[in-house]
Image 1 (cartoon, helix red, strand yellow):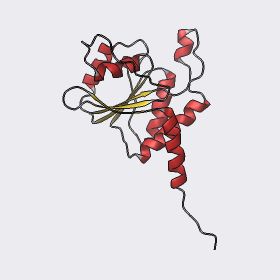
Image 2 (tube, rainbow, N blue to C red):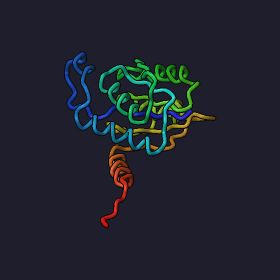
Image 3 (cartoon, rainbow, N blue to C red):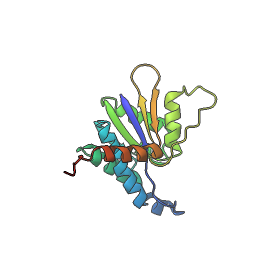
Image 4 (cartoon, one colour):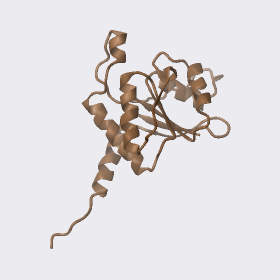
Length: 178
């Protein structure tokens, strides 16, 4: 299984009221970034068999915008196992439910998404898990085939923007002025 862990894109300032914060949408920059990331993933020919999102609005929007850009046409599955209050055990249960999928995108929040990633690639018996920084919009690809999970790559928002600019420039048709 190829597991893609995506931290939701920019959603502005956190709200003190948890109910209002759970309904906080992506801001303009976050929406634009999702479209750029989706186009970059499309250029890489990545497609997802299933997209699972935290039920919070900013994650659902991130999953929807990226999914649309890569041509994902199925329904996005909502799971509390990706919400900010979720535990690693909840996350492992979700992974077990999704074992039949080859390319799986999960969209969630920090700090637990970083902890889930660290818990996958390092045995839980390790005294201290590594610290992995997932900025808003970061995407990690993890192979869950045989043995322990392997982190294949981690894509930060800055290279995504550069890749987007490069791919849009190179995809324009060249015309001559004769």
